[in-house]
Length: 253
Image (tube, rainbow, N blue to C red; front, side, top):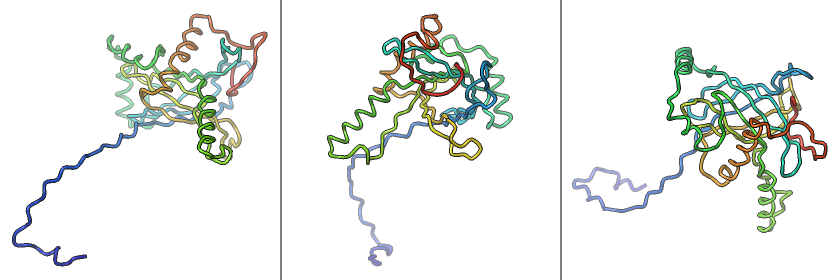
């Protein structure tokens, strides 16, 4: 280090005027956690949820208890029987302090602004009730995996040796607050590594507010189709007479 240059100077040199281009890196999108285990109390013939866990608001980080029921629908294009999840969340986040929980309870009792429900649907045609969660199969998962493998081959890489791309198995929406936009969910299927339920199916992923992207935009139509057709009584449940079966997750049917 030049010691002389660090000593006080009698007449400081004038600062040179420089112009530099400043670039701002995109801020990471706030996310919350989703995690659910198989509900061991769920037995044949009952109406208990197939999974129980928690879902976290991406901004406030409030952690809500969550129950998910597994249901089946028939894909009209392929004839496959697939599984989707539909559930409810607790009204207040259990990790909030008592004052915040009380405030959430009071706010929930107030009527929502009549102009806001349309805002809540601006990223999807889904009409979810407050606290309702919907997860449906990612219809683009296999396509994305194939595109990723083809890209690796084009680059001269072996897809078997490269780290595999892992798009979510399920994605959907959560109406965390009727006064806010719907929250987007991305969920993966995996096996538990915890001793008490080692090897059992678990659902894990993250929440965030939807961002304009090809994947989200492309998948809005099938999402609304599954939900709306079921409400209209058009969508079938159960096993068709002639259909290929594809079970994405175990659970109540």
